[in-house]
Amino acid sequence: MTATGAAPPAVGERAPELVLPDQRGELVRLSEVVADRHALVVFFPFAFSSICTGELLDIQLNIDEFVNDKVQVLAVSCDSTYSLRAWAAHEGYRFPLLSDFWPHGRAARDWGVFDETSGRARRGTFLVDPSQTVRWSLQLGTGQTREVGVLHRAVRDL
Image (cartoon, rainbow, N blue to C red; front, side, top):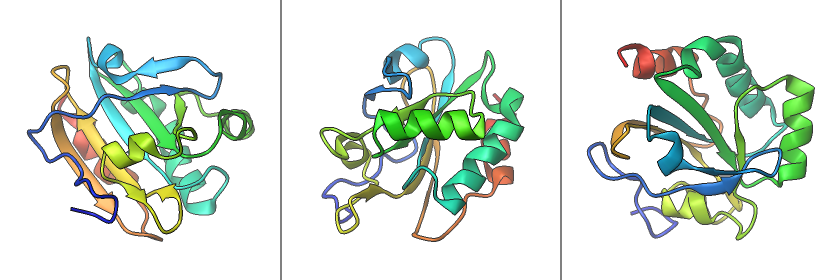
């Protein structure tokens, strides 16, 4: 268990459903995304922060590896759709940035990665297969950076 009351889904467990608006306000459903491919679900604390910007730019620079017919990256934070839209436009992100703004942090809580003290998502990363089962996961503490090489290895053999 975490401070959120829920533990992150373990490898081999069913991933919680996600139904969140992206940066354009369009609803994205995890169950629909994984109907025909894997999803790399990347929770991050805040748009426009230096570590989060660097992590998502690493994904963007390698977009063909993270968005293709085998996998779709879904980045999730508690920021509003307006903030995520501005950030995506500023950085040129070409993948969905999902807003867990309201009810604040519900998805992050469901996934066991919500930090109640700071009101933000922690860095949790989950590879979910077409049966909506978690196949790989990584959780990091505050201030730690996801190395893009780790994400490459997670999706390499799909």
